[in-house]
Length: 193
Image (cartoon, rainbow, N blue to C red; front, side, top):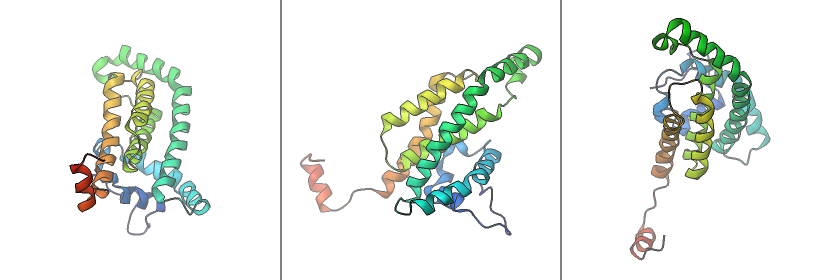
């Protein structure tokens, strides 16, 4: 379980952190381990921007604001990753040639970890808002293709992991928006839905 990375007895929870927790951050299976440092950095670096966006667009829900923030951050992190990819590939090759395949896997490129975290969060929020699967899958595929060059995993393996976060959000969305009542049962009975 991901502990609230920024919350201590003396430090109150930020709006961004509270929004992530209320959205169900602890439900994102892919983020249960190995992302604590990146999540803390993400919140520290973006809580002011989230607050500013909330103040400027008070009619948007917190989750809509979070989606917009994550979309912007995903674009920025993807660009940073793309611009440093060649250097990272060279470094990865040096590690593999000097340390061997087994130990080179311990090398974790910071932009790569950041991109993975933001992508998992972004796709989770898309699912949490009940957005279209095919659009989320396209986003996951593009990011997976970027990351696979520095990973031993295939594009498809990475994409499937990302889509797991989308489904984590979608399951929460569906549980909250479960249709009920006589009208819904009649629609299902007559195949009108």
